[in-house]
Length: 142
Figure (cartoon, rainbow, N blue to C red):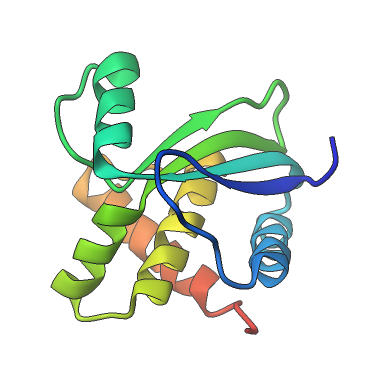
Protein backbone atom coordinates (compact mmCIF):
# COMPACT_ATOMS: atom_id res chain seq x y z
CA UNK A 1 0.00 0.00 0.00
CA UNK A 2 1.47 3.35 -1.08
CA UNK A 3 -0.69 5.82 0.84
CA UNK A 4 -3.16 5.10 3.64
CA UNK A 5 -5.64 7.52 1.98
CA UNK A 6 -6.08 7.54 -1.77
CA UNK A 7 -8.35 9.61 -4.01
CA UNK A 8 -9.64 8.49 -7.40
CA UNK A 9 -12.34 9.55 -9.81
CA UNK A 10 -14.55 7.19 -11.76
CA UNK A 11 -16.57 8.18 -14.86
CA UNK A 12 -15.98 11.92 -14.24
CA UNK A 13 -13.06 14.30 -14.48
CA UNK A 14 -12.50 15.43 -10.89
CA UNK A 15 -9.46 16.21 -8.83
CA UNK A 16 -9.55 16.98 -5.11
CA UNK A 17 -7.96 20.26 -4.06
CA UNK A 18 -5.26 19.98 -1.37
CA UNK A 19 -5.22 16.14 -1.15
CA UNK A 20 -2.27 16.15 1.29
CA UNK A 21 -3.99 18.54 3.70
CA UNK A 22 -7.30 16.68 3.37
CA UNK A 23 -5.52 13.37 4.12
CA UNK A 24 -3.81 14.87 7.15
CA UNK A 25 -7.12 16.29 8.40
CA UNK A 26 -8.89 12.91 7.98
CA UNK A 27 -6.07 11.15 9.86
CA UNK A 28 -6.37 13.74 12.67
CA UNK A 29 -10.13 13.17 12.95
CA UNK A 30 -9.58 9.40 13.19
CA UNK A 31 -6.87 9.89 15.83
CA UNK A 32 -9.16 12.33 17.70
CA UNK A 33 -11.62 9.42 18.05
CA UNK A 34 -8.87 7.13 19.41
CA UNK A 35 -8.86 4.86 16.39
CA UNK A 36 -6.15 3.94 13.92
CA UNK A 37 -6.08 4.67 10.20
CA UNK A 38 -5.72 1.52 8.12
CA UNK A 39 -6.51 2.49 4.55
CA UNK A 40 -9.18 4.63 2.93
CA UNK A 41 -10.03 4.88 -0.72
CA UNK A 42 -12.21 7.73 -1.92
CA UNK A 43 -13.86 7.39 -5.32
CA UNK A 44 -15.41 10.56 -6.69
CA UNK A 45 -18.07 9.81 -9.28
CA UNK A 46 -21.32 10.93 -10.94
CA UNK A 47 -24.90 10.56 -9.72
CA UNK A 48 -25.47 7.76 -12.24
CA UNK A 49 -22.42 5.80 -11.12
CA UNK A 50 -23.32 6.04 -7.44
CA UNK A 51 -26.99 5.30 -8.13
CA UNK A 52 -25.92 2.07 -9.84
CA UNK A 53 -23.88 1.06 -6.76
CA UNK A 54 -26.80 1.97 -4.50
CA UNK A 55 -29.17 -0.27 -6.48
CA UNK A 56 -26.72 -3.13 -6.99
CA UNK A 57 -25.19 -3.40 -3.51
CA UNK A 58 -27.70 -1.79 -1.14
CA UNK A 59 -30.99 -2.38 -3.01
CA UNK A 60 -31.83 1.35 -2.72
CA UNK A 61 -33.22 2.94 -5.88
CA UNK A 62 -32.37 6.52 -4.88
CA UNK A 63 -29.75 9.15 -5.49
CA UNK A 64 -27.32 9.73 -2.63
CA UNK A 65 -24.22 11.81 -2.03
CA UNK A 66 -22.16 9.08 -0.37
CA UNK A 67 -21.89 5.33 0.09
CA UNK A 68 -19.39 3.93 2.57
CA UNK A 69 -18.17 0.34 2.61
CA UNK A 70 -16.43 -0.72 5.81
CA UNK A 71 -13.49 -3.03 5.05
CA UNK A 72 -12.04 -3.22 8.56
CA UNK A 73 -11.20 -6.67 9.87
CA UNK A 74 -10.54 -5.54 13.41
CA UNK A 75 -12.01 -3.13 15.93
CA UNK A 76 -10.32 0.25 16.18
CA UNK A 77 -8.86 0.19 12.66
CA UNK A 78 -10.51 2.45 10.08
CA UNK A 79 -10.54 0.93 6.59
CA UNK A 80 -13.01 1.44 3.82
CA UNK A 81 -14.06 2.50 0.35
CA UNK A 82 -16.01 5.73 0.18
CA UNK A 83 -17.90 6.65 -2.99
CA UNK A 84 -18.97 10.30 -3.34
CA UNK A 85 -21.23 11.77 -6.02
CA UNK A 86 -19.74 15.11 -7.04
CA UNK A 87 -23.10 15.94 -8.71
CA UNK A 88 -24.99 15.50 -5.41
CA UNK A 89 -22.38 17.45 -3.44
CA UNK A 90 -22.64 20.35 -5.91
CA UNK A 91 -26.47 20.36 -5.72
CA UNK A 92 -26.48 20.02 -1.92
CA UNK A 93 -24.00 22.89 -1.53
CA UNK A 94 -26.32 25.09 -3.53
CA UNK A 95 -29.41 23.89 -1.58
CA UNK A 96 -27.69 24.53 1.78
CA UNK A 97 -26.14 27.85 0.74
CA UNK A 98 -22.58 26.71 1.31
CA UNK A 99 -19.51 26.38 -0.88
CA UNK A 100 -18.82 23.25 -2.90
CA UNK A 101 -15.54 22.77 -0.98
CA UNK A 102 -17.20 22.95 2.46
CA UNK A 103 -19.97 20.56 1.44
CA UNK A 104 -17.43 18.19 -0.09
CA UNK A 105 -15.40 18.17 3.13
CA UNK A 106 -18.59 17.54 5.15
CA UNK A 107 -19.37 14.51 2.97
CA UNK A 108 -15.74 13.30 3.00
CA UNK A 109 -15.73 13.30 6.81
CA UNK A 110 -19.29 11.90 7.00
CA UNK A 111 -17.98 8.67 5.46
CA UNK A 112 -15.15 8.51 8.00
CA UNK A 113 -17.62 9.08 10.86
CA UNK A 114 -19.66 6.11 9.61
CA UNK A 115 -16.48 4.02 9.73
CA UNK A 116 -15.88 5.31 13.27
CA UNK A 117 -19.29 3.93 14.25
CA UNK A 118 -21.59 6.95 13.94
CA UNK A 119 -24.97 6.31 12.36
CA UNK A 120 -27.68 8.57 10.95
CA UNK A 121 -30.84 6.48 10.70
CA UNK A 122 -32.81 8.00 13.60
CA UNK A 123 -33.31 11.68 14.43
CA UNK A 124 -31.05 11.33 17.48
CA UNK A 125 -28.31 9.61 15.46
CA UNK A 126 -28.57 12.22 12.72
CA UNK A 127 -28.29 15.06 15.26
CA UNK A 128 -25.16 13.50 16.75
CA UNK A 129 -23.73 12.91 13.25
CA UNK A 130 -24.22 16.61 12.34
CA UNK A 131 -22.55 17.62 15.60
CA UNK A 132 -19.59 15.33 14.86
CA UNK A 133 -19.36 16.64 11.28
CA UNK A 134 -19.23 20.22 12.59
CA UNK A 135 -16.65 19.28 15.20
CA UNK A 136 -14.54 17.51 12.58
CA UNK A 137 -14.80 20.41 10.14
CA UNK A 138 -13.53 22.73 12.87
CA UNK A 139 -10.31 20.65 12.99
CA UNK A 140 -9.41 21.66 9.41
CA UNK A 141 -6.40 23.94 9.22
CA UNK A 142 -6.35 24.69 5.51
